[in-house]
Amino acid sequence: MMIETGMAQLAQWLLWPVSLGVLATFAAALWALGRMLAEAWQRWRRPGWRALPVADHIGLDALELAALQQLEPLRLLARIAPLLGLIATMIPLGPALAGVASGDGGRTLLGFGNAFSGVVLALAAAAIALAVHSQRRRWLLAELHAVRQARGLAQ
View 1 (spheres, rainbow, N blue to C red):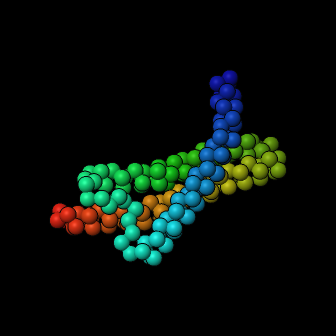
View 2: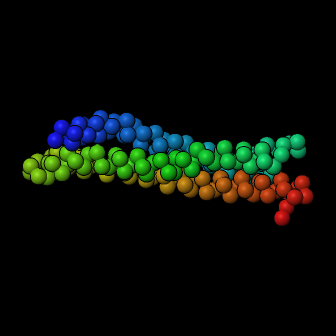
View 3: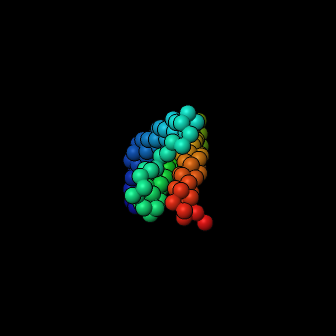
């Protein structure tokens, strides 16, 4: 019984850091969306604008690495946000279910409300990050293809 109580207390202690993580992923996703929209504006206003370095002395491997470095944070954000959302959902469910068992409607409602708001924000962050990642990946792959064609290496 002592182990279960300790685990429940530890899980409760994780609620604040996980909730902050959910808020941070949501803010990061909105930031990435804003950056992508700014990049879309640049690409629309100045055809030929590139996110990758354009110097001829830079090898294709270095360009591919630069593209991956730009995309990796978005990929991680899209994968980590739902995990944090799941944790943020599960932690308040224990006390909420205890409220159901004891007939305490206020505690039950608060627990379920907290659980669902965490997962909604986390899933929204993941959806935004995935959409931004997909669009930026298409742009960067098109840039890499254009560089290969310009260097006579297109397949």
